[in-house]
Picture 1: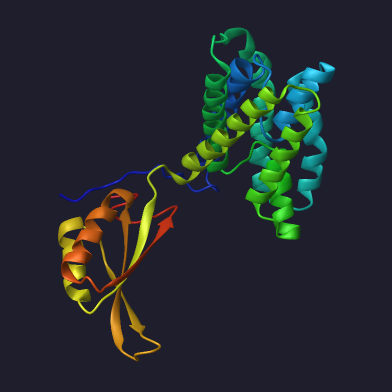
Picture 2: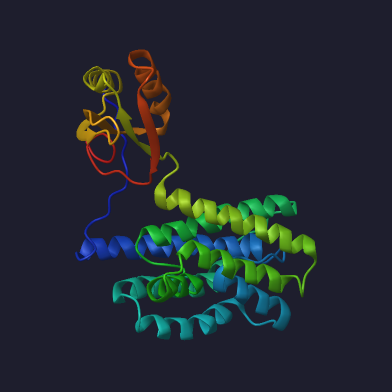
Length: 292
């Protein structure tokens, strides 16, 4: 039986339905981040990554309300972003920030604070916060703050977004050492790391697919078994060995992470001299993967 995997597909962003979908998704992600801050991060004195972390720091040190801190830190960043980034990205990011600022005070009276150990708090806050942020990114926005700065630095200085996020979070952790115990800083680091991982899982998916290249003298037989046993499509690429000068049909196919073991078995049974390499694929669009 042919396996099918479904994946959420958004409506085109330039249609009314697409805009509504993105606003609802971004708002939901911001609500999750607000819940994480109100129920887990703030009550236990932890920090988070980015501007939210700075807002929490100013709350603990100067008693500045968290929503006000988020707003004040984001104003100059958005002004800077207007000159450098696309309007749609900034508009959706603005929706995310405003929803977060509104949701923080509105949800606080209704959210019970769980009685948890700090390690459970750091794990739980990272999961909820990361899912919320990942949803916002998936729907074309950002949680604002350092995410916008990272996009600007990528465009102007070719600094990778991942590198900038790492250094900005490291700065927040370093600042926390001046005001809090090392224990709080370490638990905050755990929460930020888990949040980043959850961001990746929401954006890219937990089940990564694999792109496989196979070079063999028995390409036709291997391709036939891939199509028959795995029910996956196969593409032939024309290849020529630089040293040998021999022309061969190179197999290219995409399979799920769970099918790699079976694919290795097929290749090993048919040609133990075959050359095969496998790379991660974060997103696949096509029959058998995202729609039927």
